[in-house]
Each structure stands twice: as structure tokens, then as C-alpha cells.
Amino acid sequence: MSAAAILLAASMCVLGVGGGPSDGSTAVPMPAADAARMAQATTALLAEQMPPANSVVILKDAAGCARGDTYSPALALSLRQAGFALAVDGQPTPGAHLVRYHVSAPWEDSVLLRVQLDNRETSQLFTRGLDGVLREAGPLSVRTVQ
Image 1 (tube, rainbow, N blue to C red):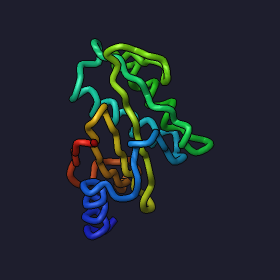
Image 2 (tube, rainbow, N blue to C red):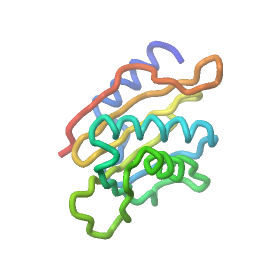
Image 3 (cartoon, rainbow, N blue to C red):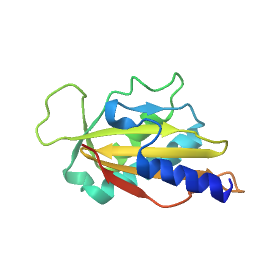
Image 4 (cartoon, rainbow, N blue to C red):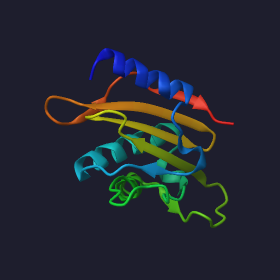
């Protein structure tokens, strides 16, 4: 991916261009290995903001996810393995944190991950290296969502 494309993607993250997780969760279909990598990255981002062993997470309904979505189940598994408790969306759970996500593929061999925890959204662009593995590409962006 060119430097211009990375700069454009980073700008889109900061500005919140192109939709996002504020209305629900979405994820594009991707190979299982990529879904596992993105789920691990999401779990790490959430673990930096709250302690897994003491946190309950509600994954916002993934109704916007495409058929064949591999990311959503990989995320639920990754969160459980890290020690997060998962609550059911739509059921009142005192003290639970609402998590929404938007996983898109704006360019070939890239994935844009946007995760909203309560009122804070974190965005990160990932690109595929020569070894075929997705890696962070560009700055991590954090913004407050109204």
C-alpha cells in the first residue's frame, strides 16, 4: 500500500469518514486467520482500557455483518479467552460496557478496524506484509463519540 493510501486511511479514521460503529456493528467477510488476528487486536485494545477479569462487555448486535462473517465469532472467543465476561445484547446488565465495531476492507490487502467502547472510538489500519500477515500500519486514532 502506498504512503498516500495510508495517509488517507489515517485521515478517514481521525475524521470519522465513511460510517462507523455508532449505529451497530459491521464486519466484512475475511479469512479465518485474518479474523483471528483482528479479534486479538480488538481484545488488546479493549484490555488496555479496562481490566478483562473485572469487566462485562456487551457486543452490540452484529446484524450489519455480512453473511460468512468470521470476525464476530472470533472476537467473542478472543474476549472470553482474555477473561472478559460477555453479556447478551438487549438485556439490562448493570456496569456492562457497550462495544460496537466496524471492520472494513477499504483497499486490497488492508483492513480498517474501528472499535467503540462506550463513548470512545479507537481506529487502526492494518495492511498485509510480504509474509501475508496483517500488521498495524499507521497511527492509532482515538476520539470521543457524542
